[in-house]
Length: 451
Image 1 (cartoon, rainbow, N blue to C red):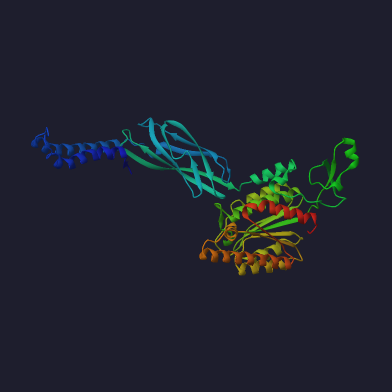
Image 2: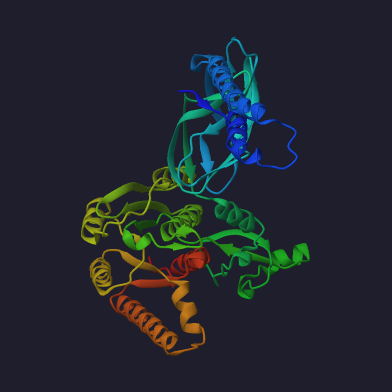
């Protein structure tokens, strides 16, 4: 269907406005027009409007047809969340009446997508037309772009038409793995303290020698190799490797408790990024790493395995997992764990609890596997509640709110204490500080040979 443009509407309204003003104009003093001439203006204005309508109908037939346009996109198949990626849109135009087609282009948008430099106004020429822009996606997952929308104009610009051109594209938006790259870089330079990762006093036993390196601050002086130090005239220390070939199994809660957001990102996004970072560290230590994501049912399962390729499998399996509003079923999750994991493992459950029901289920199931596995509960802290407790109450209502927040924190401490009493390792961390806390606890477990 053809639609009038703003240009045509303005031309059409000008005579109408003049016709409306005629009854008022004839009473103006010193008007150079006679009453007969004023009476002839109205039919003339109506004739002008009629001619404009006729011109619109004729001009509308010059709007290019849909079959003249074909579109395709070129872009990377793998996107990183929150990062603007380059996209190339190619529009092929066949020959027709118009050689330079004034147009306005829109891309197929989904929730969470940001198009930079779009919509795009341009003149489409016969042949190939290339449009480049950037696309930022703010949610993980699998996306399909189906169409491109093109608004084309007639020869005189009085009519327009919108076409939906088929243009299929598929993209996979992965979590932000910059933390993994940052860890690898700082590990090579032995500057992990910049990420808040503490150096363990000793990793492994005295008979698990790994290599010699130059002495650094906070190294244990008992590990200094005095013979090599004397030869090289600088302090050299021995490093020891931790026990390898152990299993770390992540249980990632994707239920309703993980849908809460912090700084525009869900708790599941923070948890997944931290889990993938710790998986990278554990694989570097020579351990086997597995993953299970669950909500009402088991959503994803990755069998524990060692090696760098396992990290890619974890990313590919979990990149499109999203938190749902259904209740987390701990019974099904732990029953599935018992069927697939026979070897003693560090079972790391990442979740968020705010009521006695979920807390009781978590405590019972983690406590039940404490003899067979080493259970490790990671609970997320809510910074908003902590800020309420730390703030100064200004009135009675704020005082009651502060008391309720303090009561919740006290209940949370009780949950942590009951977990520890049942032989469960427990950690509570803010979402944006979970990376370093998880790695520190993992290294402490390895250094103390708890697994």
